[in-house]
Image 1 (cartoon, rainbow, N blue to C red):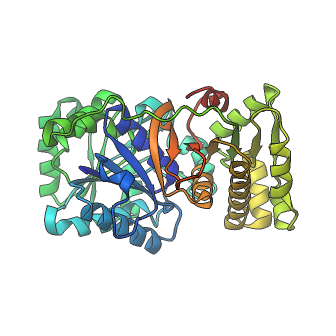
Image 2 (cartoon, rainbow, N blue to C red):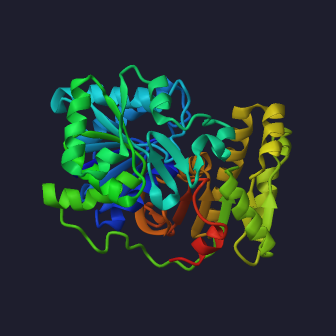
Image 3 (spheres, rainbow, N blue to C red):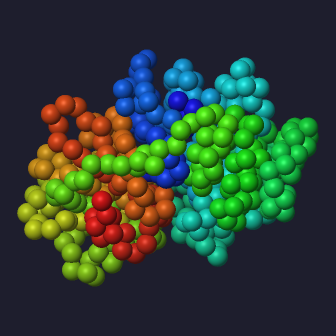
Length: 427
């Protein structure tokens, strides 16, 4: 193993893993921190992603879980590390990005002398770019998008230097686009100058893939990156050149499954709202679950499962709602309670669907994906080809005798309007 990645949610883990297999790195995603031994499926991997559900966890818990993942990756032989964060830098003033990054830097200071990290959430292929330290989604500042009203991590400031500094003890600085455009040597020189000034976290501008390739080369001496999946674009070639990794053109190969499929959506992002609407407009079967009914103790999950099993084609079961509806639900039930009820219901439905023979599941939403994967008892995922940038099909590593299962775990904001149909049409 050359590369170890700690991901703060499950969809983010598959997101970065898809970029690595695209470049030919044999990559395995593990669900949670393994035990003392290296799982067989990870033994021959070039890169291992440990997927946590820590993005919205209490800071102390997020730090503890991330450090446990880092210790395991170091013991397994990883030589370079990434803290994978969302391309929309989902966070709060308390964390968890800053506190986790600094804890990982401290842990790597003994062997690696880790005093600085590059912070680069940019993912231009999905419209996430950083210019003069400000994060854009398409043509809009992050703070002017639907992320402003995210139910758990509202992003009301697009200035990443301010966002990172608010949750960090160490100084935060900026690596501007003109320095990035000047090439890898200029990047190295600027990082060194910032380090001499005591700057520990360096927000990097990146407006296209070429900038990401330059950043990967220029920051290659840093043992830890805090990054979205875009920065991983340059890693396979970099590792092949520096560490002798043999790139594999078949790294993304999965089994061909043709069994029943279903879609579960818990995200209330603008993108997922559009995807649900397009599915329904096309006349495909869809059923919305009601959080209020769940709170009243009604058998919503069992009823939805029975309905889904009876459908002659792939069904969609969703809790996706627009912002006013979501706000009303949260006001009535509480933010955490509403989210937990939906996640538990969709996870139970997923388990029932798999028990009834469903072989392919599309799941929309990071928290929902985490709940589903954990409920299914999946311990590792092989990474397949991308359906769209940032969302690959994955195949669960299952116990002997269990039928095969493939999962497409989608960040709420990713994918075009027809993503669900496109995913089911992709092998």
